[in-house]
Image (tube, rainbow, N blue to C red; front, side):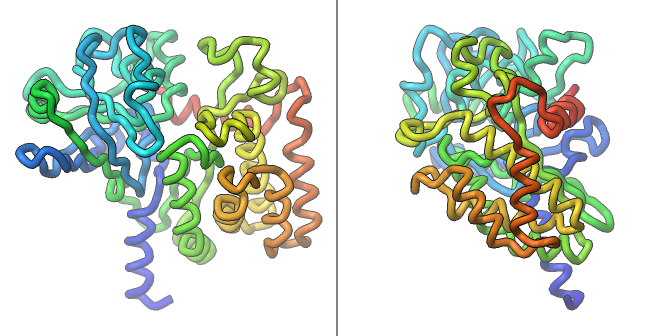
Amino acid sequence: MQGSRLAASIAIILLLSLGATSAFAKGLFGVQTHAIRVLEPPDVAGEYEGAIGDFGTPLYGASLTGRVLAPKDNGNGCERFEDENYEAKWVDSDTPVIFLLSRGECFFVEKAYHAQRAGAAAVIVADTKPEPLITMTTPRDNPTVQELVPEIGIPTALVTKKLGDDLRRVLGAGGTVVLEMNWEEAVSNPDGRVEWELWTTANDGCGKSCEQQAEFKRRSAALQVELQSKGYTEFTPHFKVRACDRLSLYAREDCAKKCIRGGRYCSYTGVAAPHNETYGEKDVVVEDLRQLCVYDRLRERGQAEMWWNYAAGFAKECRMEDKAFDGKCARRVMEGMEVGGGSQSFVREVEACVGDPDEDAAHPVLERERRMEREMFKA
């Protein structure tokens, strides 16, 4: 690779990277921001900054466009949104809804948690004073609030009072606000090798966010493989899981249907209609585990970069839309990979790693993910 091509490739990978570890290291790089572009209405349209919270899931390397909702009641998001069925009223798979909430009265993560439960695709918190942006953090000395941190699976951002006031003015007059939250340039400035981590899901049936992640894998796999194989990047995939009874996510009797390993591990993402007629959360968490096992077995062979070939292949060939989101399709993808020791041996090792989803016992790979998640998203 010539020097100019290397420079261009590194620039591309910095734009595509979905989550450097240091993005979550509070205080290490100061306040990390990303672009917020108001698209409608014209009198507010423009580019603004949002401060990324130290919880939630920024879509590094991607963007999210949605319609803004500022709840008339519970405008600070400190209570559960129970008066209306927000999800049914505001959210559909084609138009993500971004909640606009006010700062104050409770912790930032509580606001995000309540908005997420109501169906928000992202949360913007508007400051109540004209001051510089800060990183939204969570208190270390409040265990109850800390338990919410790993629950947040949507992007969060703090914006200035001025922007919040302008958006509310439009919404209060009956207008529509459409904005884009863009993280394409929101990565830290590393030196030497780019080391980054991706918190993702194999799910392609939960709506726009899942579709965007699947498209990212398909689109960038070849470049990711090239850069990592030449030593310019080092990448690790991660998948968030939670227990069946955590914060009453499901009724206990639903654990066997929705989760694996005796209800110990459930997917963070649901399956939307019409895909939920064929697949469920259990199918998602099984594939999430399989992708972790694929990475581990490839890393042992010194071929960790080939995880991208599997992830992209699965995203392309094993879609819920095609009714192919299953272990049979996953096996075909693995058998088509050129791995050390042969593909058949590789498939057997991955399947042994996945094990029996119905076994009532902890799984070491998923326990490792939980430890990583607690360390990554703690305040």
